[in-house]
Length: 228
Image 1 (cartoon, rainbow, N blue to C red):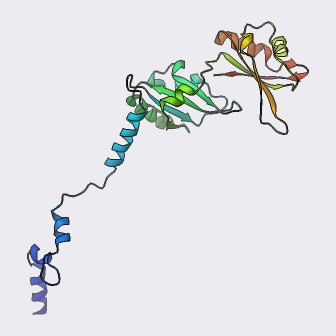
Image 2 (cartoon, rainbow, N blue to C red):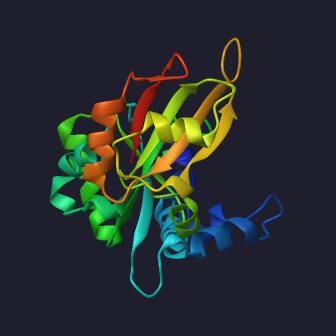
Image 3 (cartoon, helix red, strand yellow):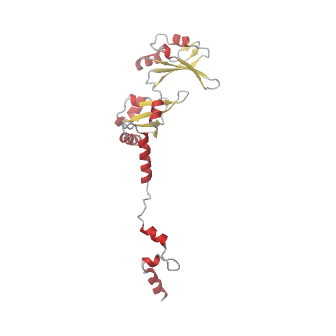
């Protein structure tokens, strides 16, 4: 008999189950059951990401920007073009992001659309490289200097070096004398004297690099690098 009563309780109408202790309907539970089922998914997060992406896009051209992380000092723009070969990038679509000591910390890439960014993600995953694309806005792209392979960085200059000493060091090379900039950067144990010099073309900058790297300026051996 007791089992029969338990069976009756299980078969009671839904309205009975919604009632409270005093027989009053449990409004909270009833409302919950009447409401459409909420979507506990990442849909809202995706919409938020899409809103952020729209903010970072250039409205008139649809261009979008990302920073490629995981590069080394030896990574060239051409390496990035080969890595993302299906995105049809050019040298003008890539700018190297240097820190104050001119160590490369990433490469800014200009894509024509978000579709190209999706393709870049797939290429990186498929090729198994230890790279990552990080979202950046257009202002970071515009404020990043594009040296374009036409600027040399001279490192290890003597403390007493002046622009005329740099001109003597670069004797025989075609460059812009007015572009010479001398400065210090933090080093160990002493700050390092550096200079940047601009050249009319990539070829002339590369020729100067080949001819002058490890040359001497006032008895100091100078390290020369091409800034991309």
